[in-house]
Amino acid sequence: MPLTKDDILKVASLARLELTTEELEQLYKDLAQIVVYVDQIKQVNTEGIIPQTQFIKIENVFRNDINRPSLPREKVLGNVPDQDGEYIRVPKVLG
Figure 1 (cartoon, rainbow, N blue to C red):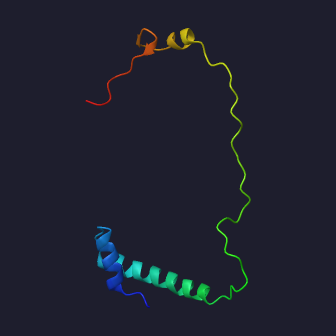
Figure 2: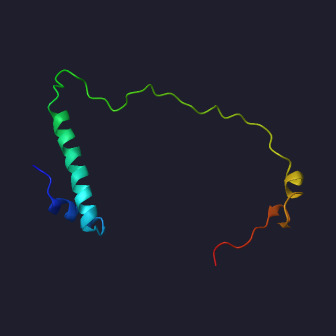
Figure 3: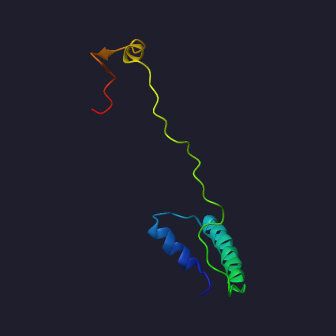
Protein backbone atom coordinates (compact mmCIF):
# COMPACT_ATOMS: atom_id res chain seq x y z
CA MET A 1 0.00 0.00 0.00
CA PRO A 2 1.67 3.23 -1.11
CA LEU A 3 1.97 6.18 1.24
CA THR A 4 -0.25 9.18 0.48
CA LYS A 5 -0.24 12.76 1.68
CA ASP A 6 -3.65 12.10 3.23
CA ASP A 7 -2.03 9.41 5.40
CA ILE A 8 0.53 11.91 6.61
CA LEU A 9 -2.14 14.53 7.30
CA LYS A 10 -4.20 12.00 9.26
CA VAL A 11 -1.24 11.01 11.45
CA ALA A 12 -0.31 14.68 11.90
CA SER A 13 -3.88 15.40 12.98
CA LEU A 14 -3.82 12.54 15.49
CA ALA A 15 -0.53 13.87 16.85
CA ARG A 16 -1.99 17.40 16.89
CA LEU A 17 0.67 18.69 14.52
CA GLU A 18 0.05 21.51 12.11
CA LEU A 19 2.13 21.08 8.97
CA THR A 20 2.81 23.77 6.42
CA THR A 21 2.67 22.86 2.75
CA GLU A 22 6.48 22.82 2.61
CA GLU A 23 6.71 20.59 5.69
CA LEU A 24 4.11 18.22 4.24
CA GLU A 25 6.03 17.95 0.97
CA GLN A 26 9.36 17.32 2.72
CA LEU A 27 7.82 14.79 5.11
CA TYR A 28 6.12 13.01 2.20
CA LYS A 29 9.45 12.72 0.33
CA ASP A 30 11.30 11.47 3.42
CA LEU A 31 8.66 8.93 4.42
CA ALA A 32 8.24 7.70 0.85
CA GLN A 33 11.98 6.94 0.74
CA ILE A 34 11.71 5.07 4.04
CA VAL A 35 8.78 3.01 2.76
CA VAL A 36 10.74 2.11 -0.39
CA TYR A 37 13.69 1.04 1.75
CA VAL A 38 11.46 -1.09 4.01
CA ASP A 39 9.96 -2.74 0.92
CA GLN A 40 13.49 -3.62 -0.22
CA ILE A 41 14.23 -5.16 3.18
CA LYS A 42 11.02 -7.22 2.98
CA GLN A 43 12.34 -8.86 -0.20
CA VAL A 44 15.38 -10.33 1.58
CA ASN A 45 15.14 -14.09 2.09
CA THR A 46 15.10 -14.68 5.85
CA GLU A 47 14.13 -18.35 5.77
CA GLY A 48 16.04 -20.32 8.37
CA ILE A 49 17.15 -17.22 10.29
CA ILE A 50 16.13 -17.16 13.94
CA PRO A 51 14.51 -13.86 14.99
CA GLN A 52 16.48 -12.03 17.67
CA THR A 53 15.74 -9.15 19.95
CA GLN A 54 19.27 -8.67 21.29
CA PHE A 55 22.34 -8.47 19.06
CA ILE A 56 25.03 -7.80 21.62
CA LYS A 57 26.03 -9.73 24.71
CA ILE A 58 24.14 -8.51 27.75
CA GLU A 59 26.22 -7.98 30.84
CA ASN A 60 25.75 -6.10 34.07
CA VAL A 61 27.75 -2.88 33.94
CA PHE A 62 26.94 -1.87 37.50
CA ARG A 63 29.31 -2.49 40.36
CA ASN A 64 28.29 -4.56 43.36
CA ASP A 65 26.76 -2.64 46.23
CA ILE A 66 29.24 -2.30 49.05
CA ASN A 67 28.05 -1.18 52.45
CA ARG A 68 30.43 1.60 53.55
CA PRO A 69 30.15 4.22 56.25
CA SER A 70 28.91 7.60 55.08
CA LEU A 71 29.76 11.06 56.36
CA PRO A 72 28.99 11.66 60.02
CA ARG A 73 25.74 13.59 60.53
CA GLU A 74 27.54 16.37 62.44
CA LYS A 75 29.93 16.97 59.56
CA VAL A 76 27.08 17.16 57.03
CA LEU A 77 24.97 19.46 59.16
CA GLY A 78 28.00 21.66 59.79
CA ASN A 79 28.01 22.61 56.09
CA VAL A 80 24.32 23.52 55.62
CA PRO A 81 23.08 27.11 55.82
CA ASP A 82 19.82 26.22 57.64
CA GLN A 83 18.94 23.22 59.77
CA ASP A 84 16.16 22.07 62.06
CA GLY A 85 17.60 19.76 64.67
CA GLU A 86 19.01 16.81 62.74
CA TYR A 87 17.36 17.78 59.42
CA ILE A 88 18.41 20.08 56.59
CA ARG A 89 15.92 22.90 56.02
CA VAL A 90 15.38 23.89 52.39
CA PRO A 91 13.22 26.61 50.78
CA LYS A 92 9.59 25.70 50.09
CA VAL A 93 9.26 24.42 46.52
CA LEU A 94 5.52 23.86 46.14
CA GLY A 95 3.14 26.59 47.21
